[in-house]
Image 1 (tube, rainbow, N blue to C red):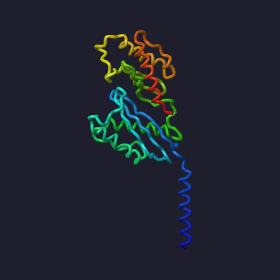
Image 2 (cartoon, rainbow, N blue to C red; image 1 turned 60 degrees about the horizontal axis):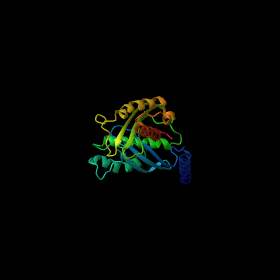
Image 3 (cartoon, rainbow, N blue to C red; image 1 turned 180 degrees about the vertical axis):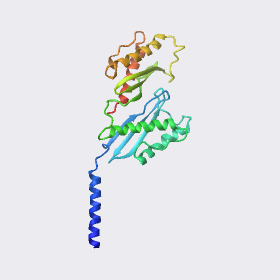
Image 4 (cartoon, one colour; image 1 turned 45 degrees about the vertical axis):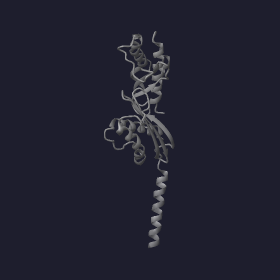
Length: 235
């Protein structure tokens, strides 16, 4: 009787292990990067490493609304730094993005969670999102020169550009003060270029005409918009 019981137990274990081995993988092993949606205060970036359907490592970064990575040595809000320090281990332990918030750092935490969620979507063996781009608002930044750089926030819905915000950031790192800026053609060009990007759609951004007498800013915005689209890609 005992012998039969032992054999039955072994057979049950074999069935359990066989079922586990045959279970379809949710994720493809590898390292995946994604960003959260952006707003005026910035966005986050996550790099998630997957092995055997488990999150084994997470790296996080947070960026300001002008596109600069936050320097935690000088950043004044301790709770945001705490989130950056503690969340990677929480994501690994949870094996997913649904971790508890950190008091007084809800905005940062929610963005980190979204960046991890998007990275995991990229890792899925059978993606749930079938569009080219994630829905939402995504950030892009141009290369910088002596005058500064351009930024863009591009809103996408079902692979269509529905809204665009562009701006100039000075070499000092601050948004340009358009009320006192003497070259008003560039200010007027912001609305013109934003509308042209919406009309052109994702495939037409590179061919959008620049605005006369605001070529420098227009070229920066084109580059920033294209980079925002790249950041929003699902694959």
